[in-house]
Amino acid sequence: MTDTGSSVKRILVLSRNDPAEAMRVAAGLTIFGHQIDFVFMHRVLTEEQAGCEQAELLELCEITPQTTVVAMQEHFTLLDDDALATLITRSDSVISL
Image 1 (cartoon, rainbow, N blue to C red):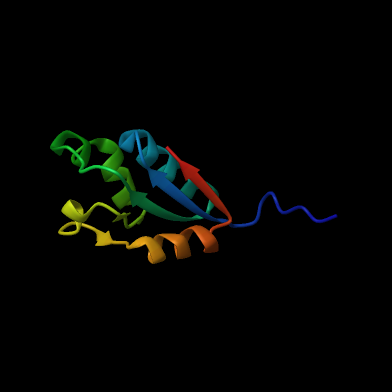
Image 2 (image 1 turned 90 degrees about the vertical axis):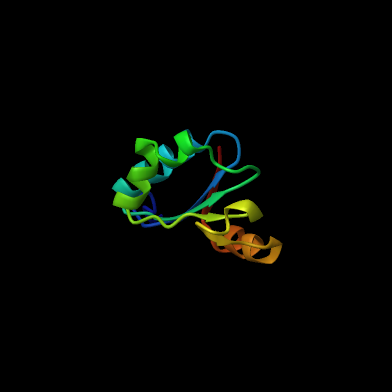
């Protein structure tokens, strides 16, 4: 039996209901060297959410957010259904917050 607990994983974090918590979790996962994909979903971020310290953590951790929200495509790469499905399929784990 091999120990796969320490191997690098590709993890997708979906920010569905709690953007600040999703950003915090995504940034924290980089400590373990995991490759993180991050997607904002369902609604536009408020100015407060966009400027929070968790958003700064994403930048410091070199996580480039993407979105499924058309109104946010000016700031982030917009994913259609197929692109989101591809991200989900190629991820070792998906976390939805």
